[in-house]
Image 1: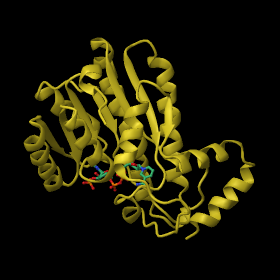
Image 2 (image 1 turned 90 degrees about the vertical axis):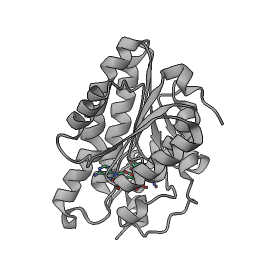
Image 3 (image 1 turned 120 degrees about the vertical axis):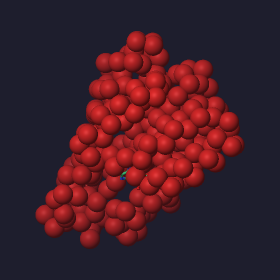
Length: 262
Ligand SMILES: NC(=O)c1ccc[n+]([C@@H]2O[C@H](COP(=O)([O-])OP(=O)(O)OC[C@H]3O[C@@H](n4cnc5c(N)ncnc54)[C@H](OP(=O)(O)O)[C@@H]3O)[C@@H](O)[C@H]2O)c1
């Protein structure tokens, strides 16, 4: 599957959270499209290994930036690194994110705040820094990682669910502002996807829908970019999101509470 991203948006993409899962699949797909990459995450060894693989397979340039994206100055550091190396980001994949699972008041508050910093504040700051350049060049693309968990309230994942609802609304609102500028933006809502996410979020609950692959999520996102305001990955997840859009709120919350109970 090809998306003509280089022709549509330009030479360089930045992927946050590229060391595993969906971000890694984005990096592999964009490199296969011939785009140079800036890849960001904490695990430097995983980034360097991926960079070597992509450079050898596709002859693209890959810059690795090891960075803890929960740091308050993370977006400033990334912007400084881009300026220093004279890199214009034409396609931004705001992917890095984590979840937490548990009864809210029993979860570690610092971890909840760091999650909101990573899932919400960082994408806001990066979009704010990169949109002006994209508008000036008259083209650009942004993919924002939301979640099916952001389409409805999810007890025992309260702050995560809210952080992903934020991403969807933020992204769709920007879609309204960016219309006609040449800059495309889309929010993608994956459901359960086979990555390291469940492990880092301490999620062991059985989920009624079989997991999708990271590549499924990437394909759904890139197909929708430039066409839709937001998209849900996979038919079963689409059905779930559609049901959540009209289901009685209390029933929805009670059912989610049963599903995700600790
Ligand atoms: N998998 C799912 O079921 C699912 C469902 C809906 C939405 N999503 C969303 O999809 C996105 C990608 O998650 P995934 O499923 O691919 O999970 P994953 O395999 O755990 O990948 C998460 C990525 O984020 C990076 N990351 C985490 N904390 C970071 C930090 N403090 N600083 C920098 N990078 C950090 C990780 O890299 P390092 O550990 O190397 O830093 C990793 O590359 C997230 O936004 C998630 O909310 C996932």
